[in-house]
Image (cartoon, rainbow, N blue to C red):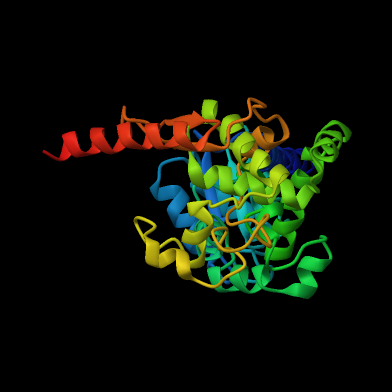
Length: 345
């Protein structure tokens, strides 16, 4: 009897251990393999963010299926008790992610890139720094400092006066924690990608360097947002350059005043600056904004109709009229002024 009792006890113990083992295995499988999130969620982890804060925000948002599973995984990775620090960054969890994957992602810095958008309407360095800082972890002061750093920019082949050339407005994929120089490296790769052998050949045919193309494209950008007209405006300025005529481009004068004047008046034209194309012949020393791709393409593929002048259309719709002669330009200007006067009555 005693022997049977011992066997029963052992069998019961083994059964308990088996159940416990099965339960433990089920928990491990659940934590390691089973998805624990109902939908996608973006996490932005700043330095020294408490893991408990992240845990609470996920649970409170309703995306966590089994909070206890996520907590076990965070403890296993040493995050819950602070043995391991979460790596700052942007992370994505979705319905396919397990608790352990999420915890390891935070512990090891398995970031997901973010989309950094530089708009074609940005016209000064302060706006670039502000736009980048609003989308990235870096601050605007650091970006502004980088935009003025001659040593840093020289590594990319640029200077503070022509750095606009390197930044082609677009949407880029970068890591949220990227430093300004890492962000600039992404910009530089896009710049190099734009300058294909075919585009280099087009610039050479026009007698322009890459930087000169960017400078002229920035002026085109300052003159219009209407894409169909960009090649014609580029053609006007290329024709003026070819015959040695002053560019007389209002956007370059606006640049001298940090784009503060709503209209360029005669007094503004008196400013003594190499960017004042009413005083100094040729292209200004560098671009006056970050030229959009369509403006670069317009310069490389200009309208070759011989126009030397353009002015706002009397339709008052933001388009322009073009002329090959000064008399034709004056006629266009009179029609525009008459339309303007009629509107103001």
